[in-house]
Length: 152
Length: 152
DNA sequence: TTGTTAGTTCAGCAAATAGTGAACCAAATT
DNA sequence: AATTTGGTTCACTATTTGCTGAACTAACAA
Image (cartoon, rainbow over all chains, first blue to last red; front, side, top):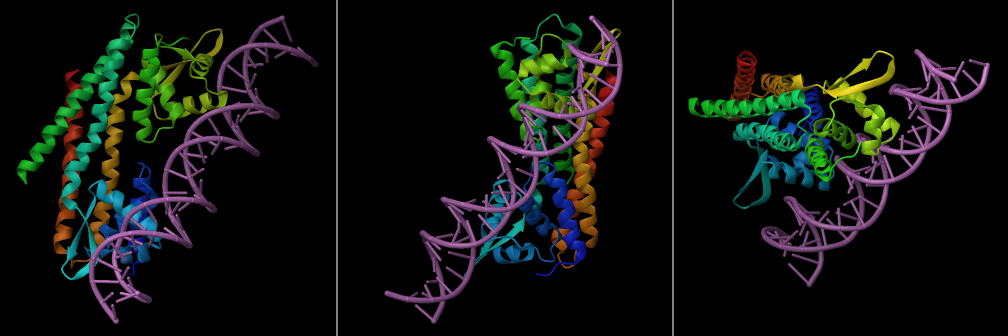
């Protein structure tokens, strides 16, 4: 599979952004390839060749992308190859997982608040406010996502 | 400054969570220290000693925590030391920045959509839906944060 | 002017992470 | 039975990151 310069550029942009949030480069590129490719279904070797990756690199990237629900594969009768594709229905779930972060943080902040010295009253009050804010935001997001899912 | 076991534990928990999202360990611990400490204002050497960090490690962690608006310092007349403290007013901004991620992603996705082959109609439609969802969520969050700021 | 305090900067090391290539396995093909 | 296909696993290497210690600066003090 041959990519245009524009496609390559977009894969790299998508990659750099996701690397910033902890995804390994190869994984970013594989994911990006699914987004820009002219075909929806890609085979192992197409991915490997197009991105100049090693077999193991390709295998591992595909594996973790499946674990994180970003891609899946289908098979075809009488064909031993796997046809990988991007799971586009997964973005609301992805977004929600991103918020889980705030929730986890909030659990720890509440725990910290409980054990803090009562001497630092102003600080404690601020920290309390933060936990309330995080509670608030979490609820708002949850409601927003529900709203979206209903209006579809 | 001597920390209780509970305080140490909370710093580590806070650290592990934030490391998961890309903060370096030392930086996490410094930030965590501000959250659990019995005092609000901490000096360079207090931080260094309490966390067993090197001078440079302490200096760099404090620097980046300032760059990311998590902490600030004040000075006192006739005293050359800096008194560092956590910026508690910063959490709404922090939250908003976290969403900037989605917005950046959305910019790239829209760009990808523009350049995609018209042959993959179903995929393109799904991708369009994703960008609409991200637009929607971004707006909802912005409104929610405004709502919070008004009701304070 | 020499020393001390409060921090910064930078070279280099140690640990962690990402990716390669070779060996391997399981299913299908000759 | 031997070979090919489609992929996985694992030992090692290369790169990146995080941190240290030593040298340095800037301000003030003796």
